[in-house]
Image (cartoon, rainbow, N blue to C red):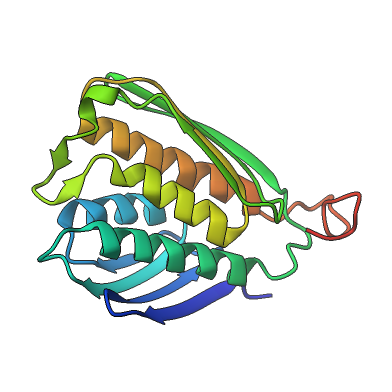
Length: 199
């Protein structure tokens, strides 16, 4: 069974195309016009073992917000599509990721009930921009949009960290690893992992 998602979305602010394979090997091809976001999505694909292709254009001459958030929306939709009825998956996954002085944790429930809890980012970085055009606060928007459109419960915590680049990167990697764990096939699962019989 192939677990591939392919979604395209065009608005007056952006044009996004995402294709992913949940059972990939981490081959990525990313182009969003936001270099630091490209770096984060590359890490997301590699550490989530996703084959991930993202092509995005948007009004980055205004700012990166629309392109970054819209890409997260489409990425979430592609994940949801690739999961199908979620039969045979582990459903739950979590990951701890250290990056030098930073430690981040992510936990995921592929529940069909979207929710995002995102805590621990140092408030002094709320006005910080990474790589010239990626506002640090966009990471929260990415995870909110991803959780809602993938229909997962996502908890992301920054335990500690001083470098905004390291904090964001540890968060993306933690979410990727947690997603990989939650969506892995469970050889002991006989069907949909829910007492309701549906996710």
